Amino acid sequence: MMYAAIAVFAVTYVLMLVFSKYRPYIALGAALIFILTGMLPPDKILGAIDWNVLLMIAGTMGIVALFIESKMPELLADLIMEKMPNVQWAAVAMALFAGIISAFVDNVATVLMIAPVALEICKKLKTNPVPFIIAIAVSSNLQGAATLVGDTTAIMLGSALDMSFMDFFWYQGRPGMFFAVELGAVLSAMILALLFRKEKAAIPKTGQRTKVSDYVPSVLLLGTIVLLIAASFIPNKPDITNGLICCVLLVIGLIYSFAKKKHISAILSPLKEIDFETIGLLIGLFLMIGGISEQGVIDAAANLLAQAGGGNLFVLYTVIVWASVLISAFIDNIPYVATMIPVIAGLAAALNVDPTVLYFGLLSGATLGGNCTPIGASANITGIGILRKEGYTVKNTDFFKIGIPFTVAAIVPAYFYLWIMFGV
Image (cartoon, rainbow, N blue to C red; front, side):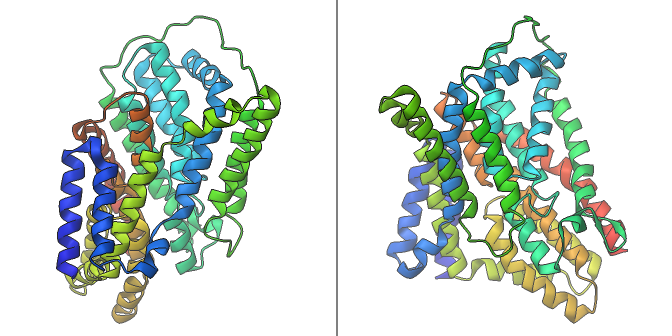
């Protein structure tokens, strides 16, 4: 059954890359195959789905719809355009801003919050928003590994090493994981500047700023950020905490909107903006990954990595980093990292070495690997879904020409930095 699971998984990913318009239906069809064939047992179906991510997407999309209606994204776009000399630096600035937010807030939520501002900038400049949104998504994925609260994989690693929030900045008397990520961020920002080098059109200075019609949606969105950060410090919280926060704030927003407009459209209009195709695609992917995990594919991949190291710490570190990049381009990094953590612990015990460099290599590789493909990370899928709703088609080549050089630029300096700091 393991080989059957690998075959279905591989064919599905090829089909999703080739027929990008039909990804949700292909993923859900493949998930159905996993269920009907018994590769994903019925009692494991609900557990395979990351309900936290789905609730976050639904809740945040609804809040963002109210946020857009208030004209706040247009005002923020005006403010950014006032400070940027041309389109090239506006794109880089938006990506860096998304990265900063993503160091403390889930990557998907970050993309949902920042994308409307980028879309408004592109509308005002009459330029293609596709590369803007892709740059925001990949930058969000990068910074998820910068702090203990930036991503689920970072939280998992922190738990394995019993790390505090500050340990990501300074660990074992040396600069920690945060600086490895930021080193990669500097180089990847240069890559983005290079990729957008032809966007030299000057940004027109109108001197007029959009007037915001209602500040309550902005308060709700800011409240979402604050509560997500606060929740990240709560130990042993329920898995769907972040999703519930987003959904509760959406309900508050809908009640406020209805009280203000006194019409059912005040509730229905934001709900219509929830992208159910993106949610369907993620459900399909979650179920497929649950199926291959259930059939031992991820465990087998972890064991192959362990054997490839050959007992040499540097070789093992190198294999873990680059194999994690490759694997995470196609497999959700959460089950992969969850599987690899005990494998690394066992390897370190067998070799009688400090596992820190292996753990950090795993986190950096697995976090960045999703940037290699348009379906490698939930943030990428969300960004592409936003563009699709705006009427834009994202080709694989559109994503590859930003995602792949960005990933290489971010991972190479982190790879050397981590080995020098924790491996030598």
